[in-house]
Image (cartoon, rainbow, N blue to C red):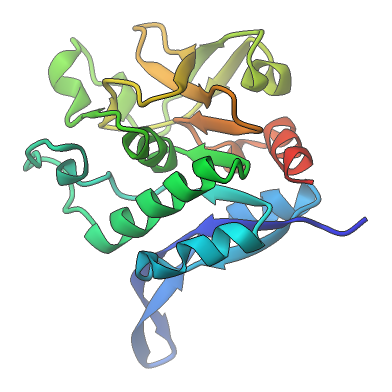
Amino acid sequence: MSRPLIGITAYFEAARWGDWVREAVISPPAYAKAVERAGGAPVILPPLGPHAVADYVRGLRGVVLAGGVEVGAAAYGDEQDERVAGAQVHRDRFELALARAAVEADVPILAIARGMHVLNVAQGGTLIPWLPEMLDHDRHGEPGTPHVIQVSVSSTLGKAVGDRVEVVAPHVQSLRRLGSGLLAVAWADDQIVEAVELQGHRFGVGVQWHPERGGEAGLFDAFVEAAR
């Protein structure tokens, strides 16, 4: 059986080869390895202009919207918080167009961390620009601190990972208004949304944490199976 082509979003960063330092297309290998283990053929997508998005969607069987820096507030009509790292506008523009095209074409989507925020904004939703400001704690922003997520058992996500999962997911932004067609399917103990699903879509799951790092093979298995 042939492996479905799975596109994985990436970003431009400076990289070093010997004495050379050049801008490079960067993607943590955990994404590609997780897709490959699940039976897919990973393809890295550079964040160039959105003109190629329609061709990507026609050629790919699934899309992973990967993690990275926070989505710029201008993408959802808000003011950029000075405490948030500067937006990568070129990446926002490309990934928002890719997400919208994949939704329109019913191409399976797995949106991870930043990717979940991209999917939400692409569907007309908004974000909380600085999460610690609206909570009485900063547990969500603490690196390396695990917390338990409650998952809807009837959801696609719940069927893949169970009703409770312990994750490490440091983030300073979160979903505010859910985008069109998105349904919350997982929550932290303070009711911050930790996962969403796109209703009526063949496979559209967004999670706040990084399943490619945590060995949650079931989620990638379900995603790649939908891509077949």
